[in-house]
Image 1 (cartoon, rainbow, N blue to C red):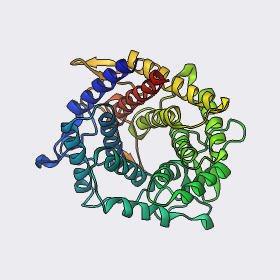
Image 2 (cartoon, rainbow, N blue to C red):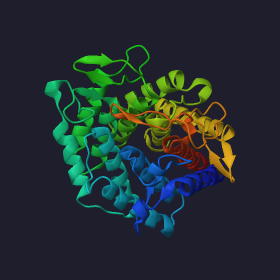
Image 3 (tube, helix red, strand yellow):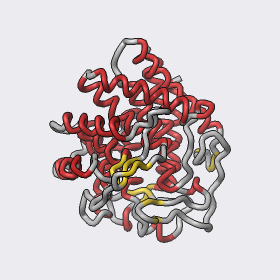
Length: 371
């Protein structure tokens, strides 16, 4: 079973690599993901810059390196890291804390998994999250600088990073406690989006569930504190009940939404492979998380399109993917977020999510075959 998913993950990697990876401004030793396929000229010239999509591309390359270590991919990882900083005006940081958290997570994994080190990047990014902590304003850390929107998409990944990095485990716990105290729906036990200027933003996205699962799982594994185990168990059950109709994670279209379900699959896989404990509730949480990942992956694969033998994943994993075409409305950056292309499957985010899901399914299948 794990070989089946290894093959599907490798094919998904090949699809993104062949269609999207290009040298940055034709410079030797560089590489970034073109944000659309088929691509407009502006995209091929990297006139379009979606910082956090590129961080997830790096994370997917690291998933692949874990699955099947290759010298060529090591080179690709190094080029992706180098080019991110180049395209981001020779800087690791930007104004969005969620963006920076995704890059920090990917860079920490790059050092740990692939030995690709950027020694100044991680302390600089960690400092951004630590100094943004603002309990006096109702946070949490905010979504972006000079903002009073404290949300799960910033606190979740920043918390996961701080739990893994240096000596910030206690702050990661404080962030998790803030989310649990402030953003949990008492009825469904799902995670609300955030609080803005003191008012609850009640939207519930798959993305928010995924990052909080990742944070609580990381803390359960690192501290052994039962409150984190209980939160993981509760949230896995809530996602299974409310966010995975017929067992398949709910899609959120293209643009930034294209990454939401993939992120949720990544951290459900973390639950399935990493949550410790032999108690019945721990076993049940791992099994449920694995079930949602594998059923989502099977559905996404069954509903894919194929071009030149390589998959094109749908923005919604429970229905047929649509083949993208040149022309039509493309993804646009509006009010701090990227909206969808006319055909969502055109967006790199959607294809990265499918690849991320296949890597998640592989990691879950490996653990299942061992158990």
